Image (tube, rainbow, N blue to C red):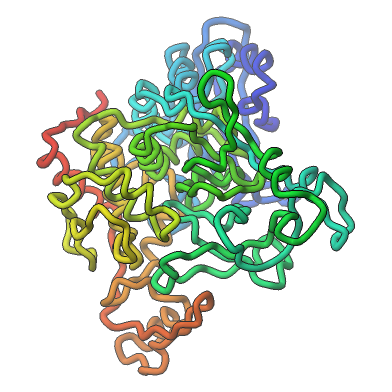
Length: 535
C-alpha cells in the first residue's frame, strides 16, 4: 500500500515504466469513507501486487472506496448498470461490477499515450488514465484516435505572472510593476486583466470581484440578463499606466506575451481573440475544463491560460471553443488527475473536423459566448446563412435559435439560463456524434465521470416558467411550501445587478441525459451521421 503520484507525475516516467512491468494488481482507493481515521478523507492511495518484471499485464480498478467492492467485482457476472464515482443517490459508489476491473496491457498503454502524451514520451512510460469502468475506457479508445487541437499549431500564453509582474506598495509586494491591485470597471477591454472566476464555460462574464477583494471566493455572480450591450467586466487588477503609476503603456504592451506573425514580426497576443481557460484543475468539481473565448485587448493572469494565433481564421477559433466546451473534452482532461491544465493537456483535447457538424456547433458556441459588443467582430466574421435555417432539437428553450442576423445586437447572445443550458447540451451531442461516440456512451460519461454535475442537475438546478435558474432562497422556500409558496418568497434581488426578479411557477428540473439523447437522435437525422458502439 502506497501513494499514487508516480502514476501521474510527468517526471516519474522511468519509475512508472518499471512499475508497469511488475504490477499484477492495482486497486486505487480514496479515503472518503474514512477507513483510515488518522489520514484526511481526500487522501488517495493504492493497493498493489507486484511480481517479476515481464510483459505489461495487470488488473486495474480505480475510484474505489471500500475493499469489499473490488472483492465482489472479481466474481460479478457483468449484469446491470456499470457503477460510477457516485451512485444515483449521491453517495460514494461502492456497487460491485465485473467491468470495474480492466485488464491493462501494452495496447492499453498505447491508448493512454495517445490521450495524454507527446511523441517524445515512450509508450511504456505513459501516465495512467483513471477510467472508472470498462465503458469509460472504451470511449477513451475512440477519443484517442481523434484529431487534436494541438494539430492546429496554436500559440500559447500564460498571461501575467501574478508574483513577478505585479508591483504593489499597498500590499507590500515588489515586482516588475506592470499591474497592481485596484477594484473597478476598466475603461476599455485594453485595460482588462482577467482572473479565473471571471470565466465559465462559454462566458467571460461569470463573476465579478467584490470591492472588498478579501479572498478568492469574494466574488459575485453576474446577471447576464442585465448586462450592458458594451459591458466591460469588473476586475480587481489594473494596468499600472491606468493607475498613473510609473510603468508606461508601451512597457505594459511590450512585456505581455508576443506571438510570431509572418516571418519575423512579433505581435501582442492581446490583439487576437483567444480561447482561454482556468489553469487550475478541479478534478472532482462540477467541471474541470472551464473554457471560453476572450476578446482582443484583454489580458489575464497566470490563473488563466489562453490559445490563439495572429491571423487565425475566427471560424476555426470558434470550432476550437466548441470542442473545449464539451463534456467529452472535459472528460479527456479529468480522466488523468492533475493540479493544473497546462499547454500539453489542452493540445491533446480532440477537435472536430466533421464538416456537417461545424456550422451547428459554431452557432451554439457563439450565441453562448458573444455576450457583449466586444465580441461583435467575432460574431460577424463567423456569421453563416445556415444559422437562419438551424433550430433547437427540443421545446425546452425560450428563445428561437435561428432568430439571428449577421450584425451583433443585444439579442444575439443567449442570456436565459435554460437557453444557455440547451445550447451546451446540444454542443455535447454534436461533439459526441462527430467523434463517433454513441448516445449511450456519452450518457455513461456524464453519469459516471461527472458526479457533481449529475447531482446538481437532479437536486439543485431548478428552472422557472421563464427559463431562469431559481436562486437558492426561492428554491428553499418552495421546497418547504411547494406551489403554495408565498408571493413575496418568489421575489429575489440578484446580488450582481440589484434587479428584483419574480420567479414564476411551475418550477422544474431538467433531465440532461434525456435531453442529450433527444439532441443526439435529431442530429443523427439532420446530419446523416451514425456512430458505432465499441465492440
